[in-house]
Length: 403
Image: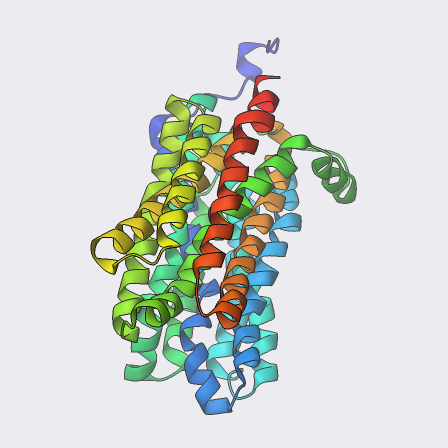
């Protein structure tokens, strides 16, 4: 119970304040993710112009993703300490530097691109800022929905996918990078002026290393990391590999396969807030359990490579919806169980697990197809992993939440 005199207690935030903070955080997340994804659409172009091997092309795409995923761990911990009001403008401003470097001078060799891509990973850490920031502004019964809405900002990668190549063709390589840098600069100024941390925010006093150590000892950190590696990792894997899969398994043209991938991504993004909303009204454990079961069913069906219309399309869209829902429910679970002053630290570790989890399935699918000339084994493996995650959710995670 708060025993402070009434005048010393922070005023309860209004609905308008909460909406403004959620909007600014979601916008910042989307814009930084737009910057984070600038290299991927141009990877084929760089491969041709610089004579890169397939491995070098993959490395070029992977570096910002790996840095952005692992960087969420310290950035989440720093957000616990300094708040989103400091971290959002800081990360947005810092991301401008590699964006301009890549667009203006850093795209004439593989080394330059890798250096720029490494620092471009800073933009990918913004997810670990927004979750604790939004979490502080909303009461427990609304956090799942709010964090789910914030999570839809991952659609910023779609902005890059839809605009980067066309801008380069029309106006040159520098154009999408300069445009993104300008937008980030405007956002950094707006965020610096308008963002406010939630009243009464819990500020940890422990040193960073000790807080990270304490976070890694929390049961929710590892449970949510495992679940997010499956849910968000599955989304990342399909968003990266689906065009290759559709072209190989069904003989689709590249443009048709890319459009279908865009539909998969869009549905997953739209379902993420739904996952948070459902978690608020039932429980994140229940939502996760059902979402993972649906993923397992969709993967099993697709393992037989059914006709693309209608069964194959239905299987992939069902999996997209379930993976988006499960991703939203995972952070509803974090908001429910994690200590208030460690939400950022936990988010950083869980976010890193999800990002890294997206690298294993494409590698496995490619290797298995190379060995057996079929994707069935890879999709059956996904089925097994999803079933195991659903059982884990219904047993160990459920008991942890009820404890």
